[in-house]
Length: 71
Image (tube, rainbow, N blue to C red; front, side, top):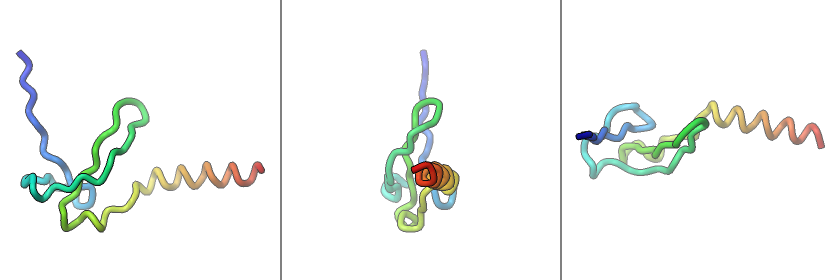
């Protein structure tokens, strides 16, 4: 018999577990590169402070610059 325990959500801004379900705010879904993605959560008071992943933004910027220079 397989028993699955629920893991608490982790705040994207402060990297702390969100223990109170009423304080958890779902911000979106982040696709994975080599497998399933994951949901992005934050404490309600941190939701407006969460910014896009800087690594992904740098990669996207490089792709867009390369495309612009080729055309």
